[in-house]
Image (cartoon, rainbow, N blue to C red):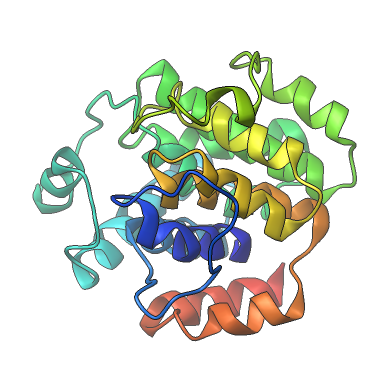
Length: 259
C-alpha cells in the first residue's frame, strides 16, 4: 500500500508539469496526496473489514470510497467519479480509466492466492470501472503486486502483465512522444514497464515520472509493485510520512500492522 501512496505523492507535482527525465527531486514542499492515495486508503479500509465474502467486500469498497472521497474533496477526482460520489444511488458507469488500477494494490496483500487476488481486484474495480479495460487494469496491477510480494521473478510478473496488455516498448522509446492518457490501456502497461526496467524502488518512481502523462497515477501503480518487489528504503519511507494526514495515515498504519 505504501508504495502506491509514495508514488502518488512523488508524482503529484508532475501531473500537469511533466518532467521528461529521471533527474528530479523525489520530494518537494508542494508534493501532496491526491485522489489516488485517498482511494487506495478506501480499498485498504474495505480489505481490513474482511475479504471472505466478495459481495460484502464490494459493498464496503463502495461505502469507504464514498466516505473518504467526501472527507477529502478537490483532490483530482474525475468528473464522473465526483458524480458517483454525490449520487445517492451510485452505480457502475462503464469507465475504462486507470482509477480502478491506481487504488487496487491493497487487495494483493490480503490475498492468499493469485486467483483470490484477481477476484478481489475485479470486485473492487467493477463498482465504478465495469468496462473490461477497467477490470483488466486493476487485475494487472493487483496480480503484479501479489506476484512480487510472494517472491516471483520479474519474468513471471511480465508474463502476468502481458496476459492483459502487450509490453512492446521501452521507456526510452516512448518518452519523447508519450502524452497524457488516463485509460488503463494507455497508462497501466507504461507503469508496469517502469517497474520492470527499474533497478530499485526509487528507480521505478523515477522511470514512471520520466515519461510524463498522468504522472502521479503512473508512479503510484509502479510504486505499488516496486515496493512489494524491492521494499522501500527507510529514508524514503520517513520522508513520505510527512505528506500523509488524517484518516489516510490512520488506515495506512492499521493496514501496515496487519499486512
